[in-house]
Length: 215
Image (cartoon, rainbow, N blue to C red; front, side, top):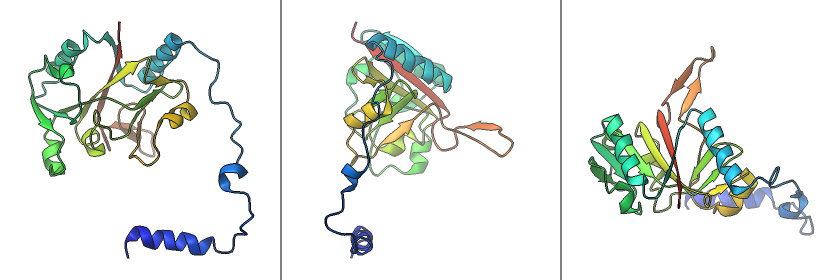
């Protein structure tokens, strides 16, 4: 018996005394809350995302599709990155001007090997303007969750306005709950009891978000 079967068996036993006519959870909990606040335009929503990302200490860049390869090259050069992790479905043109050796996302890579990589470049699934959050779901442009948690520098490309929503409820409507979702609001950070902030504890120390428009 697998762990999954064992857990589901315990859930079934716990629910054995629930009357069959009891209102299902999906209908018992009201879902009539607002899914959006203020009705911002697409441009204003992207501006709000940029402000909130910066408030969380992410570094925000705004470029066109044509300018993206040069920007990625410059960001990697500024870090002195010799090796960069790339997911299997990353559009090749994003890295067309970059010089570092590309390390492809592989299941056999060990944490030690990933720790030797200075930077990772990914896309995203969706970005939430109100919370300054980018969400990864392990898609082809994003790769496995661990490749965005171990390297110290993460460049995340967000297509605007198509991948930007106003609120978390709107984001949830676009996401598949069965996929491995990673919600990122700024670089990884924590504080001790004296509120001394330490960055890069359980994720990248530096998060650079590139908002790419089609114009």
